[in-house]
Amino acid sequence: MSLPIHKRFEIVFLSKHKYGPHFGIKKIANIVPCSTSTVKIWLKRWETDKTLSDKQKPGRPGTTTEAEGDLIADAANNADEVIAKDIHQVLQQQDVNINERTVRRRLVERGFRYMLPLSKPLLTSKHGEQRLRWAKNMENQDWSRVIAADETTIRLTNTRRMSWQKSGQRAVRRT
Image (tube, rainbow, N blue to C red; front, side, top):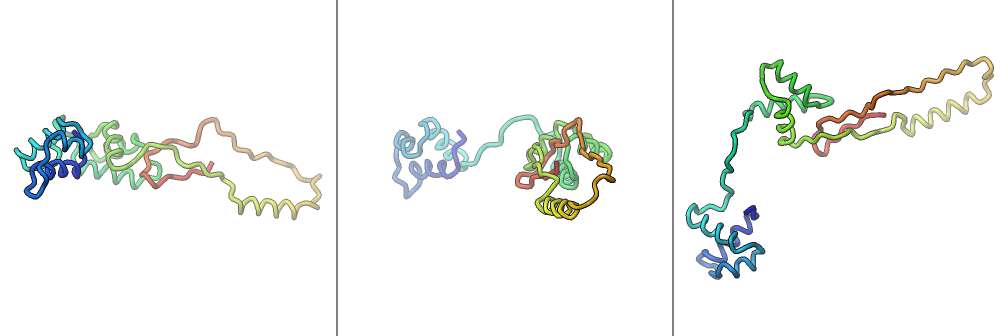
């Protein structure tokens, strides 16, 4: 029954409208590619309610208010690295009791996605040029008096942590 609104109006126009062709249910179902039962449902809804919008779906009411959803979104927008656990702790400090799972759901509703940041190398082409220039300058240096130190960083854990990011605003982490 999740027919787009323009198709619903087309069904009513083809059957009930004063200036419409007044087709039958089967012909309308062929013109608007849908089942005959769908055509019947929307025509009946039009006759009873004079509306073609979706009815409110039953279900459990939400646990958070719109204001609490705004608090979650504000906390996410103000943080550098958005993690649901951190937002949950910030909200608890403000005496707002919301489950961490609910925080994740509200972030998804507000357009956030849980993803890895883009990986960008630490060295840019400018850094490479500067290193090459330095190496050429130091080529004729007396290296017998220099003690070399290997300053390689070895990480035991991954530095690319997943975080909540707005779609289209990917975080960049230098690796």
